[in-house]
Amino acid sequence: MFSVGLVSAALALAPFVNAAAPQWGQCGGIGWTGDTTCVSGSVCTAQNAYYSQCLPSASVPSSTTAAPSPPPPTTAPSSPTTTAAPPPSSTGFVKVSGQKFVLNGETFPLVGANSYWVGLMGFSTAQMNQAFSDIAKTGATTVRTWGFNDVTTANGDYYQLWQNGKATVNTGATGLQNFDNVIAAAKANGIRLIVALTNNWSDYGGMDVYVNQIANSPNHDLFYTNANVIAAYKSYIKTFVSRYVNEPTILGWELANEPRCSGSTGTSTGTCTTQTITKWASDISAYIKSIDSNHLVAIGDEGFFNEPGNPSYPYQGGEGIDFNANLNISTIDFGTAHLYPISWGQTSDPTGWGSQWIADHATSQKAANKPVILEEFGVTDGQAATYTAWYNSVISSGLTGDLIWQAGSHLSTGSTPDDGYAIYPDDPVYPIEAAHFAAVKARG
Ligand SMILES: *[C@@H]1O[C@H](CO)[C@@H](O)[C@H](O)[C@H]1NC(C)=O
Ligand SMILES: *[C@@H]1O[C@H](CO)[C@@H](O)[C@H](O)[C@H]1NC(C)=O
Image (cartoon, rainbow, N blue to C red; front, side, top):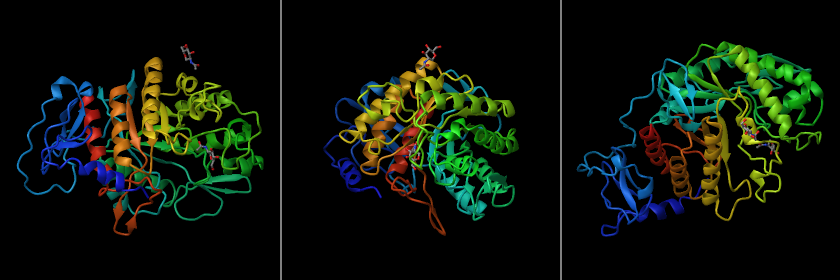
């Protein structure tokens, strides 16, 4: 659970009537009774009808500097949801053009959230629908989710059952038909999906199940090099991806969630380098393109740089990822980065460290002239302040888009999983997401 202490402290500054609103603070919007002027150096900028924010003067395009004065309070809005822009069309495939995503000839703003759980918890279509609806009300266009669950005993929603070294895809109501329902619920809410096809981590099966079952080894990196394991993974890809080749709700496929040389077993052959994973990513992405030319392909990695000797762990290449080399792969359409400074040992200034991480990925984006998204990020303390800063870094650096880790819903049967990062519609971060998504859309 995150601490609400810092959040309250930040927001409490705004209502003092004679003090200007602080930088990043709210300064207007329907129902707002606090200060409508900003501290010097920042400008009150309308993000949507319900939310105006003090942004640094330098980051505000001149055409948006005049904040409308808020109308008198009428009924309090339940959430800052009514952004003017309609959801993108549900027909047509999202493509890339230079550093942008495009749909039917127009920029497609890739903003939204992760929901790994929506297709894995036995949810009804009504529950899936509410989950996507809660996300869509922020103005999100895109959700990232899991298109895998490898089990060794049939139970709940799963996609592949492993027994005696052989995998059987579950095409039934708890398998691919369940994923059909995920797609339908996303589509009904104007949401596109990024779907990861396996996991580095041992949650929901993933790489280690393939390696254990086929190579009978604890060495995680055999996933990238063992010919029989690669054939088994391609077989799963073929079944899963072929089913949805003509489905425009899929925005793109991802080779794996957070691939690294060492996995949950903590063991590897000792021969895995960045070149191992770059070669694997070239091969698997080309394979996906050979069976599905409609959809985009990305890796789904954390975006680590490969600068041996760099004092900062995420820049050292030690986990087997070379972000810039991978972005050069012709069958990789866009780059992905994750951002967890606390887990990565960057504790002295996690917010500032994260802003630099975002800027460095924007530099790679420009060099490769391909889109790059911050597709997972999280802290568990001081979320409102940190996310506001990072969202602003996305805008100021020109990074193509972002997906927060992670969405949450209060369903009638209980709340969806909270790993300390979940943002439910009653969370103070929820309107901050909405304001940012509106800002990315306004950027065009
Ligand atoms: C892959 O999984 C294990 C945790 O089970 C971890 O040791 C490794 O660092 C993970 N890699 C990631 C998160 O990319
Ligand atoms: C990516 O490709 C460019 C252009 O071919 C090249 O200059 C650069 O060195 C490559 N980067 C990496 C890390 O391979």
